[in-house]
Length: 450
Image (cartoon, rainbow, N blue to C red; front, side, top):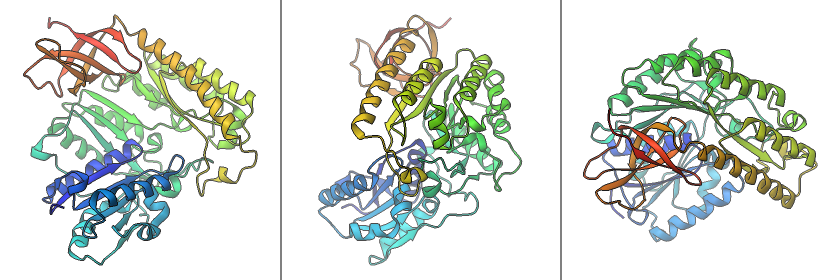
């Protein structure tokens, strides 16, 4: 074990990734350095409880940490995120190395707690209370003042929707919007540190400003203000909720050239009966109308989605309605899962659970359809030209005097392209012609400058 070192393990959504990046930056600013798991003095597990068996995953990870560190009691293990919020102080009994449990709001105080725990070896700290308003976190400067080409900025925390299958309101609390001025300041800082693209994060971004923490700024207005910041080339956001996406949000895709033509729009199911039981508060007709309006505003808009199969009471006809909707929307990609009970969510009490084998069969059929749609979308890109924001070298082989780099196009698709060796292309915008489609990515050729 090396003093003042940390190792971070992250599960789950992009908000968890952002939380981990923030904590890593703050620890670095406080004099810590990153280390391999077996050498770290502080190990942080940032957890997710959205999908099945999250507790078992955490327990398994704790066992792996114990084995890698030899069970050294001086190694401080911190469990943060949704499972920490859900299980609370019971995590102290699962592994003696765990001495900090911090929920979704409590992570803001984690850096101070970590330093205190390293001084007081018999102390345990739990940070599990939800706050009434969005709490600003300690500034997290990029190492050496230089960040990556893409920055992720939280604009809110929590959710008020209480969809029947979802545990988020119980693990991340009620919706709390962040102050507009603080969001814009973080975006400016990210751009000054070298970011060219910003992604705004929240459980339900379209509802930004509608809670008691709001300062009168709507989501569409926030988009316009961020898009106007000097140095911003691209703007994205996740996650949208179909019921809250108003005309101004749709119009932004036509009005803001910085707003990328890609939207993740969770549908969850295509059957009106299932959508009603899920408490999604829209039906298939409304969803299709929204898709039509979005593509009218931005004809090249690429859509991705989330889908749950095997929701309690789902019939084969309900599932066929989901397949119909997937075809009608032409999603470029989707995240699909079999339904699983989440503790505290209303659907856990629903009867008529779909047998797991039947749900798995439906999932495979859905994914086969999505694979075909994704391949069709990728193949249609061959021969087109686009601009990539370069992220770093790709695992592909060196090609003569060129090195393969990976960038993302405006649709968020990873594209591999050979670029001149001996130069750092990170953060550059590179024009390419798409030459080949792979299963989940594209290959391009750099175009000569005019």
